[in-house]
Length: 230
Length: 223
Image 1: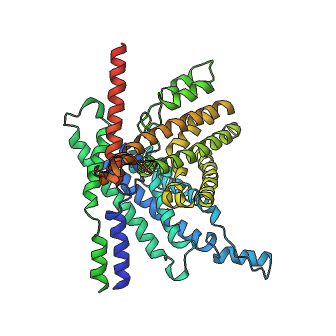
Image 2: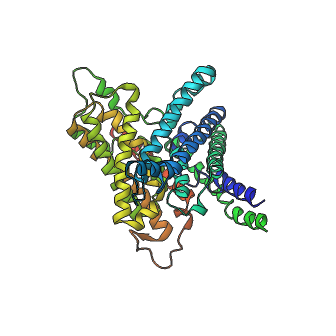
Image 3: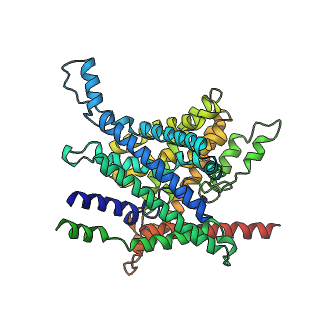
């Protein structure tokens, strides 16, 4: 029960309370750029959720086994090179470069896969797929996972289950935010917005009001934790 | 990069004109500050713009980091521009940016530990800042080193200016201080909402409206 409770807390916190877009401000570019039509926004959200899960899985594997201080694989190689050495192998300086490489290659992979097997979907995504590489939300998920894996005590280290929960529900939260925004913007087209606020200005103000609404979720996690851990 | 984020830098047309190498270093420098301001005109680099502007100190540290990364990345990309293969271009950009960001991140952690803690994940997120990738793509991968440096410094100053405008408003209204020094009278009730996430969106939206209104008005009075 406690196990499911912990996962549920991570999920709710990533999707609603600390929403990637409205709380951490990551993934703002597609949030402003692709939120004109609901179906397109939903497609973008799904693509991001998909890529975020792959990237989170790969970055968790690399961090745990290669990059973190005292990681098994790098220690083993170091021991093979210089037997009996007492040095703790720490490759965490390479974290960012490895993450961005992982993200770029998984986007390439997803793009090739979608182009081969779902040509219609590929047509409707068009330019947005390669742009996911530079979507902050994905790197942000990798960094959040790194925070819980690299340089923490063994007992507190996140397993793959928690890392994937955070990534998938972070993506779900992104989808929720961008679809809500697209719905509002479709209605906004019929409104008389002041000339100078048209476009990005009014979108940002609406996003601010959305963020205020999402602030209402603050504290839900604490009450839920108290409920589940009893 | 720029097309999808809404901005349409007019310089693309200039650079494509025959018999001309594109704007010179001076033009690039001036362009970056106001006419093509990264935040208000091109809508680039929005994540740090919103996330670190709850105080001036954090905003200026972020601007300094972006200045360093953008100058270094532009120099490097400009030096290797003849070796770049089109399909690997973006990957080379991001990997070289990631290297310089690691330098900034370690530097902040060593000498400005508190600030590094406060900025948290937003320092590594400079890697995917569209502003830097777009400058590498638009300017550095096509033009010589001096032009690339001028462009990088100009764009970073424009970025710093944008960050300062938002951070100034948010810090004065939200915590009644400026650079951590209290300037509002004691009777001022701090508008806490301004330093929370919604305040960032609303401030940027209103400032953007103000900039648009002002530039439309001055254009109208001139012609």
